[in-house]
Length: 293
Image (cartoon, rainbow, N blue to C red; front, side, top):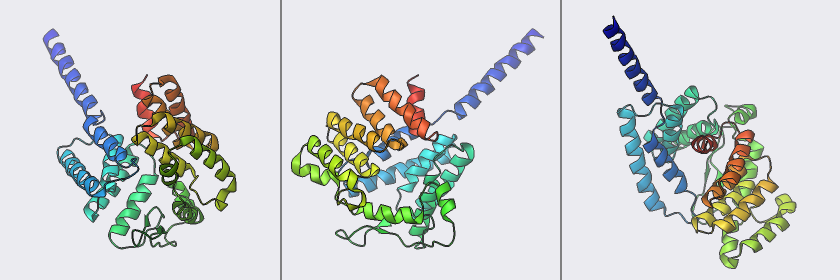
């Protein structure tokens, strides 16, 4: 009787361990996701190199899928983002499939990526997008345009649900994308303080400004400074962004990341907590807070 009980407990523990292992996020995939994102935060991207890196990552993710190594909601989310940066319909179709599964497993996952994946897949098939997440240039020196769109298939309410913004907001984004980048101005002055003064002058002008002092524009400039190993200057910029856009979760996420890079852990975690408060679906903030308990 005792021996039977021992065998039962042994197999129960073995089974529990197997289930736990299957539900643990894929660390290799997480690293690949971080590399995928980091490669897009540098000021001057070498696209020929990045396209090759993207292809290698996508091939590895396909192997992981074949071997049953993509299991959790975060795994599906990370793999979807990697496929999102592919250049063919195989990759774009996989991005849609993986993101749908990610949301099924974890409803708090950012729904925007599913909308973007669907639009990207439609674009790869030379069909009109429906959410309005894809922008193109017809030539290198041309201005950004909203990729062709079928505005009748879904409503603005559905676009809001997927956090893509209304049609009016998307047109505004096109205007913003064609403004002068802060990094371009910085390369002429090499002074973050001058750029801060510029932002404070231009921000009140709103749509009359010729500079991109939008939340994403300032954030991108901050990351460009980080990539240039100028973290202290980046911190000033990212802190200013949280002050100008206090309701934007991503400003606090980026500010927290920079603080952590500078070794200011407690301040960084506080910023991440604020980001998560503003957006409970912020996976990056969740991960940082979970690993720094």
